[in-house]
Image (spheres, rainbow, N blue to C red):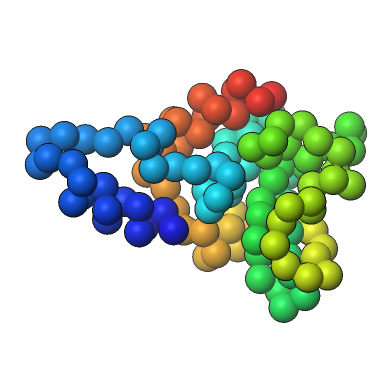
Length: 124
């Protein structure tokens, strides 16, 4: 999704214009891994992925085990509620590595990372 939006940005902007990550990053649809990574790093929390019965990862969040809370674009929520509104059947969650997340969601630029850190600081 991110790649598609970036490509469209090239056509929509004039050649000398640059877009800000807030123009195309959506933590609620497709870029949850970016925000989870920033929250994880800032708060020293592990990252967890939500998987469907086929093993596809659909969402990433930081997990505060002490508080038993998930931290994502919705803020801090009880981990029992984290799978609400996430697609897939028979969903489960487990700790995931950065490599697993990159494989599924891709990587981000330094500017995109900075934007996510700003958003993460407001959540934590």
